Image 1 (cartoon, one colour):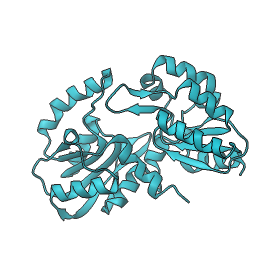
Image 2 (cartoon, helix red, strand yellow):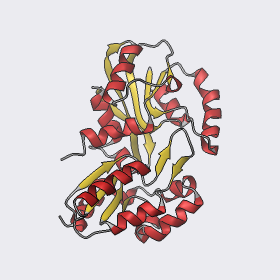
Image 3 (tube, one colour):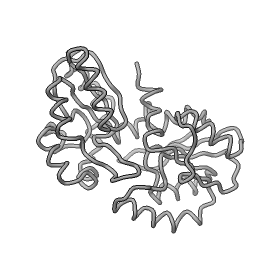
Image 4 (tube, helix red, strand yellow):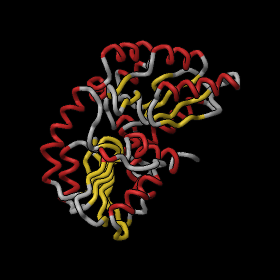
Length: 281
């Protein structure tokens, strides 16, 4: 398959030019890592929206790998698989351009050595972050809402001129059963205690916002919509970095006043559902 044709179709489908995220990534990816990206990534990527083709390694591909984060073991696995078949050409479709250490340093760039290996072994890298969060047909929130069997759902949470979350109804159930079901559909053994806050509410009206759900505006909007339960990737950041400490301080102020139940799966678990359920085919 011609890579250029596939990239053109992806760019058009996700309307990547409408989602300029260069400021976001320049603020959260470490400076040294940003310098590496400038050496390896396409100029139109780093000087543009930070969505689209990041690493152009081959004109032809016959395999696509879908990932949430480019964690070092994930990239190593893809490299090993491609080396096994003599690296004829492949594309990584990723939700993020950088890895995320949820309990560590936060976002970190792909290692320079791995970028070199990807380029050497004909593996290109494509990112769709906000475009995949906000698409009206295939999105992180729609996929999770469908997996939860939400009814009568509607969009909420403004983002880049569109919406990134959905809220809707489930059959009235208790919190424990709902949390078990959420863990099951996100392929987790359980929901972590640090990401669970049961406020005694039965679960009926659910807000779904995969990934990082620690923005006070998102929580307030969900509460104002009358939601009794807020589902996200994480609302309580665990990492040892400045942004995480700042958000924990905000949550300590906001959360006690909320009447909603809060449930976080993990950043990865909440966003892998779209790649598993909606992207194939």
